[in-house]
Figure 1 (cartoon, rainbow, N blue to C red):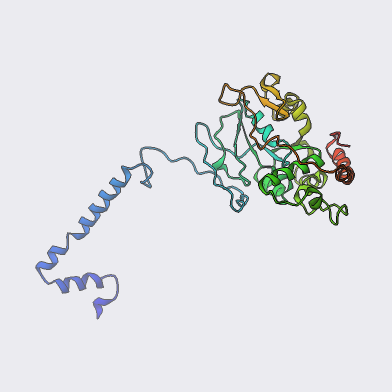
Figure 2 (cartoon, rainbow, N blue to C red):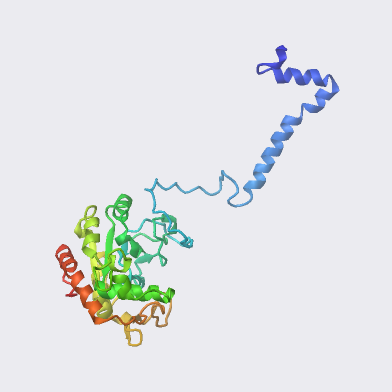
Amino acid sequence: MAGSGGPGGGAGSSQGAGGGPGATLRTPRVPLLFAALVLGTYCLCAFPGRCPLSGRVPEPTPAPAEPPSFARSPGAPSLPVASGSGRRRFPQALIVGVKKGGTRALLEFLRLHPDVRALGSEPHFFDRSLMPRSLEGQITMEKTPSYFVTREAPRRIHAMSPDTKLIVVVRNPVTRAISDYAQTLSKTPGLPSFRALAFRRGLGPVDTAWSAVRIGLYAQHLARWLRYFPLSRFLFVSGERLVSDPAGELGRVQDFLGLKRVVSDKHFYFNATKGFPCLKKAQGSGRPRCLGKSKGRPHPRVPEAVVQRLRAFYRPFNLKFYQMTGQDFGWD
């Protein structure tokens, strides 16, 4: 009974059970197991990434703790992890909105600049592992138009980096709403008419619950952002001027980002079929390139009475937005 408890109990029991030659046969098992363990560890270390402790290649210093990221949108596709030289960083500049304002065009134009590294996809949340690698002196950028109208975005972006530069591409909210509707209609042919969605009870009150209308309330969205960021952190790009004078607007953007003015008139030509500027030479290619067929799609015909009612609805919001930004976008 004394041998059954305490640290020495197991040793005493094995000797009693063996009794002589059997004991001498079991004794070498411990060094044999140890040798097998050492040999197994060596074999694992022969394969890259399989050995937890490698003396050949020093492990990189772990990244500092990051603030909570945005939750991935349901059904959002996984994005490829960027690779190459340099290091991944949180974006120093973000194109935060607005949808159907010209954000894709602005991003593609900016990617011509050698000091801009931008993620082509829209991640809808912050994740440094998805960012392209950048060298010292280069700017990492990301574009997700939904940020501007997402309630939690200003606080979370401020928590990530209060010095982030924020770019908002805005467009006449009436035209933007019709363009938004055209995009949805192309995916859902049985959609009710624009008028039916924009107004309650025929031409009754404007339905601000419809996202195509709500996004155009720029003053309300900006007020939420200004609780966290000063106006100096923003650049407001005119979607209309991005079409009529892309080089001029790109000049303003490059100045705002502290970049040398590299992207200029020589990079653009106007495509009359699409109705907006295209690149004479796209990034990494010597051939001209326009944005995809989803850009510049024809708008459905909307009755003039509907357009006028929406213009009247947006007018006070537009004037407030002009006052807040110090810019008159000429929508009224």
